Length: 160
Image 1 (tube, rainbow, N blue to C red):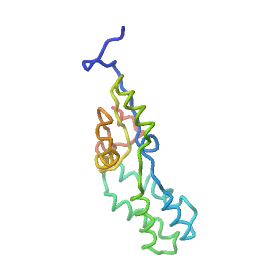
Image 2: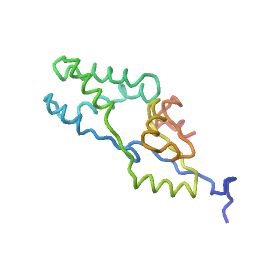
Image 3: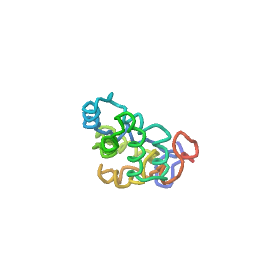
Image 4: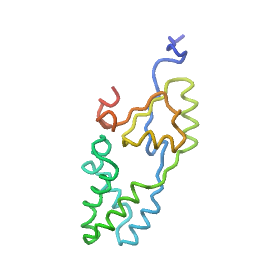
């Protein structure tokens, strides 16, 4: 019989990411804005999630507002220098509504009865607020956030 942890669950843990596993964003409004601006769909996210734009946010070095400004600065050339439009696109991404996948949440709650559950995610300093909005503050035994730790996946240090 395997040795039990003090909380009577087996040793080890379930590690789970948040984005595109539990949390999903609705970027349809952003896509509509991009089409209206004559841009290919996805150009804003491509710019926003490029490491040079996204990593400072995920390491907790800049605010979401500063991230929007960085997106706008890199996107302005694609919209004829219209910084207001570029900023609107950046804000549409930063403010995109999100939801939790109920099936995944249920699976993780079941898994947590057998092993500790740890969310390990590249996230902003707003992660606690986001988990509260999703109703998931009690989902995991621990949360490891890149913005708090100052290191992002896939760097092995975030898992340590």
